[in-house]
Image 1 (cartoon, helix red, strand yellow):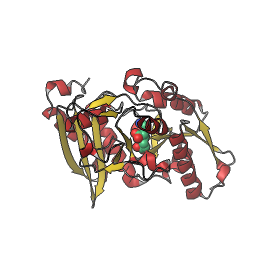
Image 2 (tube, protein in one colour):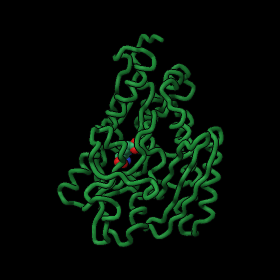
Image 3 (tube, helix red, strand yellow):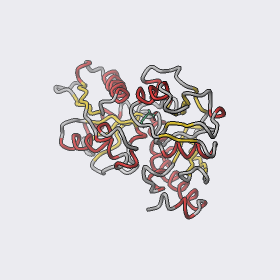
Image 4 (cartoon, protein in one colour):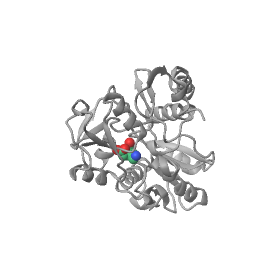
Length: 308
Ligand SMILES: NCc1[nH]cc(CCC(=O)O)c1CC(=O)O
């Protein structure tokens, strides 16, 4: 397959985003036997990158990571965009299509600063601005202190070194992609379920741009895509916002998939978990039905964090 023009890959400019963009470009080049310069990486600063001093949930949510990339895509300034799937809103414009999911990395969280979740004590402080991580931690250790911690991975690690908090949580996938394989201790998913889309690099293109969609389909991993469809359908069916603590993990289990998911109250006092099994073609429907079941078991207060 030959192309005259390089394809333009849009990405955020953070160190993690650039590593992921290079991984996506390398996968494409390898899959099609293209020359290295057939994919041009175009870093684009998003509002989320510009505003570093406030929690994401306070300043407008996950759209802040995607808005500028969406614009560039629809304006034709880029041909496709590479995202951390977990940073994408659960409902996306219908002019933009999910084109590929790269093979999933380690889905676990890592705890940094202490030896493990069991080492956390109520008098300690953990740095995080993720409502999910905060609620999951509080569910385990009521009274635990939390301090806001945004910024890229390196910034957050530097804050632990500087003693701004006793511990923090980061996705194992991001740390590994940045070469930090030994930083922190992995937490089993049974003890802390990850965010929907965690450890998946997602690629989006213009809906209807069949040439680019076909190029991208060649690098998509079927199991990662099915898991992503299920986890995102679960989050979308809940109708939550970036304030709503949600965790979901779909994994292949033999011929089927297994989806585990939970919602929590902000203070971790209420936690409703559930799971379901499904076959590849039923991913979205099964996830939506699990979301309904879980919401039905939630108290009115918890439900109000979700259904608009
Ligand atoms: N919210 C930022 C973000 N988005 C994706 C990752 C990690 C990589 C991934 O999950 O694919 C991270 C950092 C973190 O939460 O540790």
